[in-house]
Image 1 (cartoon, rainbow, N blue to C red):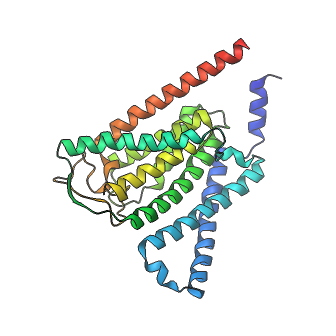
Image 2 (image 1 turned 90 degrees about the vertical axis):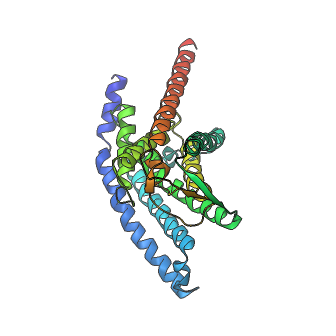
Image 3 (image 1 turned 30 degrees about the vertical axis):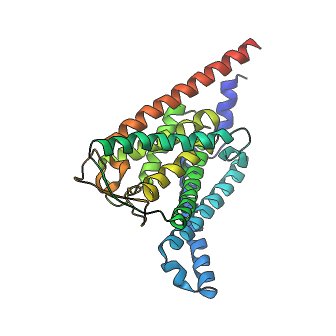
Length: 298
């Protein structure tokens, strides 16, 4: 039997990908409702409900429940699909450099994007304050956000689509569309922010096509959000998370500076994400070509 026939037979024995994704979403809502109810009850019985009225604590607690819900839903599905937990790409072994590269890319993106915006007067800095505690707590919150969304979107959904007969780039596009749809009800959403969210999904997922690992996208996602909001003072995907290191003023809200949606709603962001996604895919294809050449020569 040919390799292609074996792959097709193996795929036909699996739960269809669209069913898996639907079950994962349903499980996510069920487990999130369960965990958030348990946590609220536990807090009310111990320290009181007042802690949920503190904005950052509320965000961290709810995002922790969301992460647990994603893990619960995904682990159950992996068990029934007979796929190992390692398929999610959470291993650090051999991928530690991805953490540094992800953080570095986030810094470079904002050095270029914010630098251009500031140089051309699209944004103005009107204040500065350094609050270490706020920066630490927001870092923890955005770490939870990155873990939740990357495990769900890239680790599970994109990973599952790559087990099908779909082209890997089509799999990346589908997972990116789902990622953007997750943000459909964010404040100040519009066409350009939605397009940029699709592009963000492709940028975050591009390395996963070649490494099957989440270190790079996790790091990029974390530092992208953290630098954008708590450091630079932009809204993060339309959301305002309170105090930031820089206080920004937009002389005019337009598609060049992103307006009320933040940097992710800008044309500058669009161009940067397209350029760096192409560079990552070029690197990945070159890496695969080299690996293929080496294996054939052995």
